[in-house]
Image 1 (cartoon, rainbow, N blue to C red):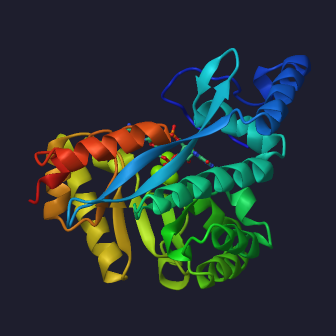
Image 2 (tube, rainbow, N blue to C red; image 1 turned 135 degrees about the vertical axis):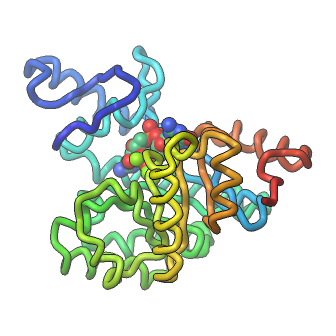
Length: 288
Ligand code: C2E
Ligand code: MG
Ligand code: MG
Ligand code: MG
């Protein structure tokens, strides 16, 4: 595992070299406890359909509600989860929580797709398609409401294996999205022969749009690339109204970012949805 660069600056766990065995053991115990003690919580960030201005779905993003350190962000602990072999257990918890939430929203008459991030290590589980199908049907949820966000490093590992896993997942009716698109090192050839539904352009292309025409040029051509392959285009990291309206103009399908909402607990998202429904002048109503 190589630790991802973080913007928060604060790490609980950086990697093997940064901690003495004893401290690592302590963190590992804390993490094990967190998994059984419901300390992992999901925050949800809305996604806006740029054609209609409607909220079309949410992305579930995990946080660790640590008893003494406060709310920890994924960059602070996912490395430890991965390295300690607990990713499989964490993914199970995340899927259950996210799908419980989706079922609850669905019961309230809200049709929101639920996007869940999947690490390469969790995708390798050979019974994942069956497990996901069972989780969906036990909650009466349609497979079409679940999106799995996967990163290009998964596609890199072993193309044939990736193909077979993704094909089996897609056959269940769920959708596959390539997250952080544009930041990986894998060949674009996978776009031609892997079963995927959506590209999610990384925020590092969207955020600089306001002052870098070259960033904008890449965004425009990526939207065209996605559409010419029949894929949906999602932009993450939409932080300002200019980017938002430009993306509408370029034909981008979906936007997600701090402009609309940070990732928030489910109850807060419900308040946000209610306020947005009331406020006809909400940003999402801009129709280009
Ligand atoms: P990601 O899947 O690419 O998620 C998007 C990240 O960008 C989130 O950070 C989100 O808070 C942040 N973001 C959203 N909109 C904006 C914006 O407008 N501006 C900026 N600057 N940032 C924005 P977060 O929640 O810290 O998650 C970081 C990463 O951790 C995720 O990146 C994902 O790779 C991973 N992650 C999060 N939850 C899970 C999970 O349940 N399972 C797994 N395996 N990975 C997860
Ligand atoms: Mg994601
Ligand atoms: Mg992303
Ligand atoms: Mg990311």
